[in-house]
Amino acid sequence: MAKRLATEYVNAKLQLTNEEMAKFIRLFEEQQLRLEVLVLDNGNQELVLEDVAGREEVRLTFERQKDYYVCVLSCRLVGPRLTNAMRKAVSAFRGSAIVNRIYSHYTMIYHYRNGTVEKIVESSQSGDRIVFEFKDTRGQLERVFRSRLIEREIDLINSAVNELLDLRNQAGEAAEIVKIDERLTELTRKLFILEA
Figure 1: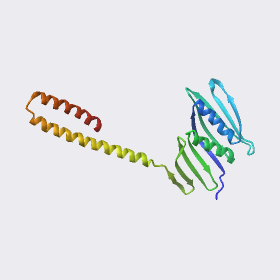
Figure 2: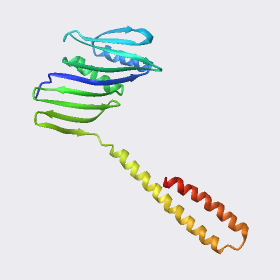
Figure 3: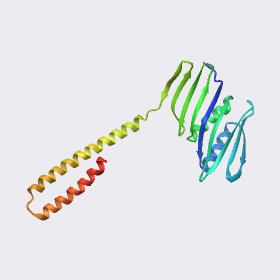
């Protein structure tokens, strides 16, 4: 099995509430990393994470933006403890990032969105190859199902309109025609909305 040489986080973005920020800090404490929290101007915070054994550290600067702490980060990690802690943080706190896991002859590029891996690409001298790509099959099926429901409803409304037009042609009283016309107006509005 190939040994990972390094892991690069490219434009990783985390957006945390106050409560999530406390959980975020606890996550790193549980990973047995040395953690230092610095409070900066305007309520910004900087977290210094250090893997004592690997002599590696990363600084995460969280800017205070309304009700959130926002961190945009690019870094290169070598040690497994800090690397695994960052991976857990991106997943657990719905981060977005491009993560390059670098091996001697190739690089695996992970695309995270909202904490989920959406795509994995293997990049080597011979080119790029998609290893995994998330397809929202359930969402696609739900959209198709909903569109078919709308089509059925449109068919039902068209049938009702045809019946009302037949009734209108057969109606002899003006009051009856007015009621039919009101109902036709309602159905026409519904049809317009559904077809839009």
